[in-house]
Length: 622
Image (cartoon, rainbow, N blue to C red; front, side, top):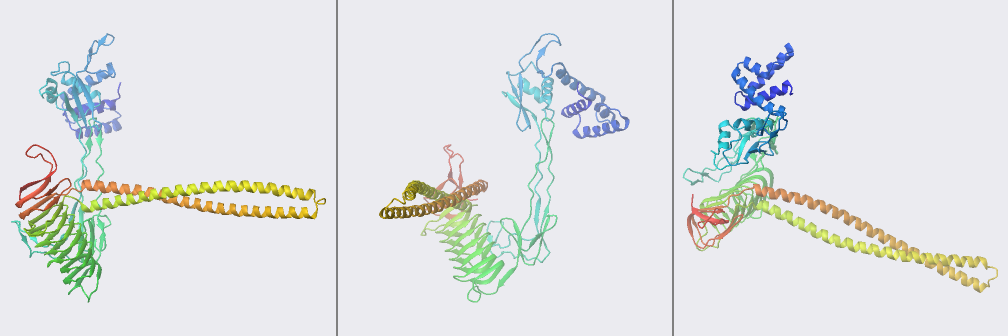
């Protein structure tokens, strides 16, 4: 017999499953039941309490009790019995019929599938039988409606022999917080796109400035998630979401509760591509960067009214100049040059925006936007390449998020090479790691050969030591015999014989001394060899750990490459000329003729012949 708590729990689960009451009603009734037990020492059935509270009617209570008795009756009469089996009363012989249905619970306990073991319609089991079977398995939540179960049994759902008969509720995670920035996070515009798709080059935006203490960003928590419930009625907790934490650089400080970021100094606020907030002091140069200024290194924003001249270097947090001429630029943020960039080398971790680009070698993490032309340049951007009203001429451009231009090429110019949809920076990082791994593996092979050579030399030394040790033993035996001979016959020996014995002893001592020196030399060499082997083994062990670390880094980069989805598309609003070469993550294309107003995108959709393969597909410009 089951206890009253178990019966009440079963009663509540069945009531919820039969859609007679919601879980909140059961919770309220259980609270009332506990109070009655505490004050009156009476255990009042949950069904009676629900009726007294007018949550259910007496008829509904009786219906639930009837279902509970049917379920408990099967278990009491024959524990573990198949509720779909048939037979006589207790004490009589029974004949179990094969069950027409099989229930399989998913590993995550969020679904249960019903499999028909016979062709529909099923006549040996009713909807009630199926529900009893589910309850005996402990499945109490998310059971399909009676009419749906009946349709499954009769075959009205079509030729379906397996069907999800119970479904739980997946937990809903907390929504990510809303992040609000109180400054323009992309101020260095080369222009603004108008509604008709043209560029307003005069609307370039203003650099934001903040005072110390100004609010830079605020985090507002998103809506809370919701617990789930598996088909056994067990609650599934809300998944723990990773907490968003503001990253603060120079000039920015997080509030104690971590919900806001304020400026700790006056200057230009900046949001890096990596999500770091900072406030940069501003260096304003009213003329050119040249002889009067020398090279410029500044942690904050550099504003140059004139030109950055040839052979000068600028290293800064961000940079805006009128023009850049054959200079070396290394900037953590954005670079802007309204009048153009000519022959410069640029590395920046933000966006590059210019009126004109010629002979430039640039690597950037953001977008490149150019007003007029990109000529004979090598550009690598992890964002987009936008030259909506201009032309790309004889250049090599890699843009992970695609390339859009008015014209690409001319009738007389050399062809351009365009790479789209590929994260070249991650690719380069992966190649660098692979190169490091190969270098270390090559060193490991060299060290292995060296250890083999040193080990061989150590074996030779030990062999030599063995031979010298044998010689030492022989000399010691000869020495002992000569001394014994000299002591025994000392009186009877002639002076000549005594001289010969002394000479022999002296020669023997010299040979013993030479052997001792050889032993010392060999042992010193062996110690040196063993020490060198030990050092090489330590280096080898360190190399193995380094390879493991590099392989982990390579796996992280490979995973990042999978998540770093690019946009392999080239768009030309005007003409893209024959000879232009394109490369995407999976396909290559060289145009054999000119095309006007075209959008070229990499796809693996079936072609007109139904073949599915990676290729570049030409579509009208949009």
